[in-house]
Image (tube, rainbow, N blue to C red):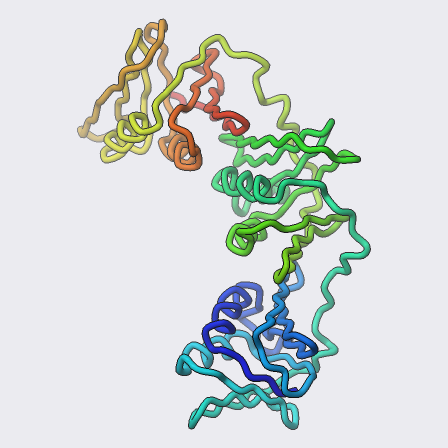
Length: 353
């Protein structure tokens, strides 16, 4: 194999690939990336749980072939070289990377032993608005739990029923729900790992296709194919947590709400909120002698409706909403309340004061 490529293009591709490689054990083939030089250059990386394939149309294929190269070392070498074309040639099971007077030699593994990617032919296609799908994943991402012993909570649920697609996440203290009206031929219930969603958010900015089976999810655009294993488990029954109706719905200005919260968290991350007629009062909750207090004007007929909340839960939601108005939906001060905007909502468990 012999190829010639642009430093800037391959460096950008490798900056993506490096996240999918094994970094602790260089003896594993998953610490390598796979290069396949045919009509185009195909680059693959995987840790077996998830993987990515990138097709580059700019590389000059001088001699066809395939090889694996340690991902970390390859990336570091490309970054160190000048912004010019780079040669890569495979000779006697050695990868030779050269540019002008600079030469590097790296051992390779047998490309035939590189883990196979799932075959998209065995997958069903999901009829979905891909850009809205990505937007939903971004919005609920902060609510996905991390390292929960209940492994199914370390991912987001993709639930389709009666042509309504729900993306759901929970960390047991709050639940985020993003809904999309979508025409699909069958109901689906799969759990996508948080780690995979983190990469999906970075990989896909344009339209793509979505495919799935019982164990894997595949996203495919013109140049990028991504796959991830799905989480095998039963997601909590989120529908029973969502209130059917609310006694009170208050419209809040996003900018005013954000400013008030940020003034309080200088002193305390936990906030006591009291709603009176035309006023929303914010107070710090702290064991120390420090105190913070502010308020905003609202339209409300409530009197002395008081609850407490972790400020992070409020800000995570506010920061992911694009519009200026957020609905605060309430029933009883001691039960979960809801922040809502169009098809995106989060249900939050209040703190015990």
